[in-house]
Amino acid sequence: MKIIRCKDYADMSRKAANIISAQVILKPNAKLGLATGTTPIGAYQQLIKWYEKDDVDFAEVSTYNLDEYRGLSHDDPQSYHYFMRDNFFDHININLDNTHVPDGSNPNAEEACAEYDALVKAAGYVDLQLLGIGNNGHIGFNEPDEAFSKGTHCVDLTESTIKANSRLFEREEDVPRQAYTMGVQTIMRAKMILVVANGSAKQQAVYDMVYGPVTPRVPASILQLHTNCILVADEEALGMCPA
Ligand code: F6R
Image 1 (cartoon, rainbow, N blue to C red):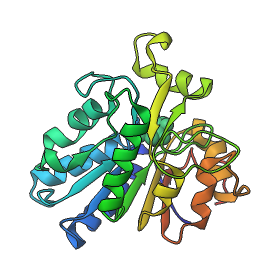
Image 2: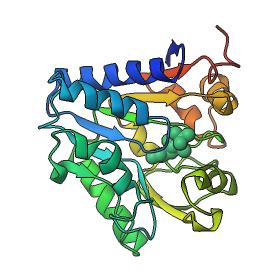
Image 3: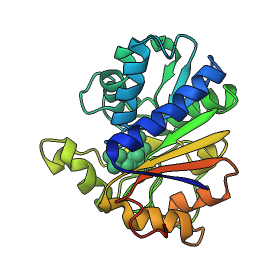
Image 4: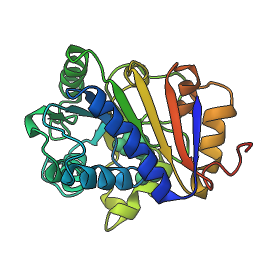
């Protein structure tokens, strides 16, 4: 795994955006795997600025998001569909028909997950997968488990994830208890993986991802086996890693 050490969140966001924009410049019809959460917001904002300056063009890009809460409609402000439009898609020239997020509004988990899997597979998987990392080492909503997951599936969120995500909801009870997520095997099929991490709360997870044993107890640790994985992280997140 290549590690790019950044001064702070702004530096991390700019460097991550640089890598994503290079991918789009090299391949205008790139397939991007995208993440929600707080960490990538700065990178999305930077990409929007470059789009406004005509430096990057998303007209032919298609996107595949990692995950979505089960039970939320697309226009629910807490849904990841809404998040992506609000933080990125509505501010660039992407064709919304080419943006994909698992369908949390479909209560039939098996059907929703199978459809999403078929979509990602038909696309030939993504060129670049952007990932955040959970405090417990999760990627997408793949929580610590006995085995690495494969395709898109429905998961019960752990207490730690519900607590971490509750900051974005009015009350902790409002956080959905289940989500549809791309599996670890699908994530690993991306040609390139770009992990972003900032802040001291991520120190342990980042250390375990890079230096710990490869184990489904730390889902992100499998990224050690990917041949083209880049970690862009700030000093705080890298606090436990050797300089
Ligand atoms: C988001 C996702 C999650 C987040 C992770 C970190 O689509 O799949 O794995 O990347 O929970 O979230 P933040 O960036 O909010 O710390």
